[in-house]
Image 1 (cartoon, rainbow, N blue to C red):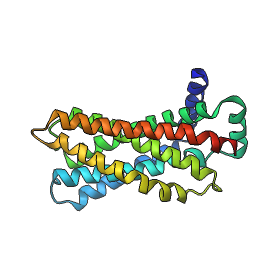
Image 2: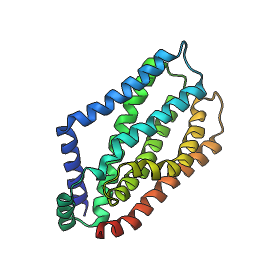
Image 3: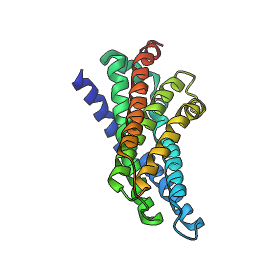
Length: 219
């Protein structure tokens, strides 16, 4: 099972490397958006504005990078996957791959934010951990939405329509949790509670994907 999952992940990575235009297109989107924000601000933004800009960009980066996950798969290729892997193995591989892609995009975004908009965080390590948790959660949600949309006549608009109402509570939680990394003093208990809640939401999405995807797989 593990070998099949890793094989699908490896295949996805090779396809992403070969289709460099997609990756570079998303990088251009990230760089241009952050640069426009930099030009529009006359001074370093306040921590709240900085934090809000960062997570909004992460949301739209995820929509562009992850939404195509299932939509680009042809019926013939899906039929081939059906013969070599179980639905649990396939969706697990997709989730792992998309989390990796989102981590890469998040790190690039964070680096560009630090370069153009400064680093207002008082605890950069904590913020980095939050970015990893948040990026994982956003990618998990939109991977599941992409799988559902792929069964609705390949309608990419459904990814955003279904995903935004679901991701908003998680996005608000991430913004609240991120504020801790900007504070001079914070309570460890509150941080642990918010991190635990974010991880729990990620686990719930994974469990939901494992339950729902086998039904989509049969279609």
